[in-house]
Length: 374
Image 1: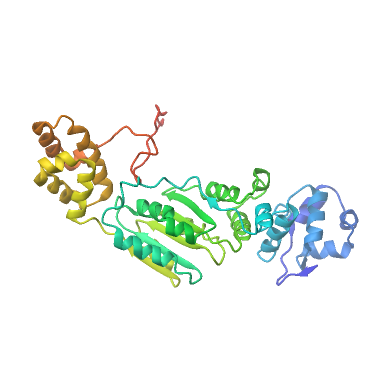
Image 2: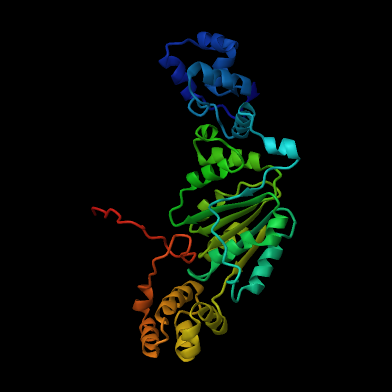
């Protein structure tokens, strides 16, 4: 039986006992303990050991949190008990049979660019980030921030698929796509299933804190890359800082203060700038070569108009590629003129599958959606 640092009455345990009309002696007899123990647990001068916590939960038909048995001091111990009881450890059956954990590749990780469509204008920052992430100096926190549409997510995806990165992060990659309203609990739940936590076990974890402790224990010494994409709030980003000592974090965000806060004291924040005019022209050339060839001045004006933002250039390039069919000069010039207007650029859409849409573009409802009544 552990002594607590400060007496705090356990009103939940007392209430559950009294609701059943049980005396302290009766409840203590039911779990094979002395009445003195139960009195101290209810008064908060001591807390039950893992053995008696399990007994209390069985007798009352409640979990440890519902009985008020999980304090800040017992939380980690309780998670350990949970893992042991459910036969979950840092080393899965695969680990025991092969000597190493099974590699984790998060299925929610977006697909990389095609081999023929390498990143344009990002060689230097790509190599810089890869060097930071694979430094091997213990905990590594790296953040990339920049304007919306500058290509932060695309860069993170390419890093996560890079052969050199995967050779270094031998245990795999976890991906968390956040945005302005992330479902942190659901993403942590998803992460838990990847190392082998079953749905039955996951259902017993009732809070983000529970998930954080269990995932940290399950990850253990694995060398994983944890990508936290499009963070809008520092609290949401920090909820996924659950890896072990060999894990590395890459955060993307449009907010410089989040990048600085996440990497404070233990990492580096990198600003991703817009493409140069020449790199922007190269991107347009890849997407709409006939337009750039026949109307180089108009194409260059478009690159400057959007400030070299890759997402905007990608949407315009796809639109211009559709207009260059038949190589009709008048049609191409008309398309270029329309795109000089900001309002026209904002209305650009293209029917694509969800996997084909440029990264960073909001995903619309693909079918008729119900309209809000408000």
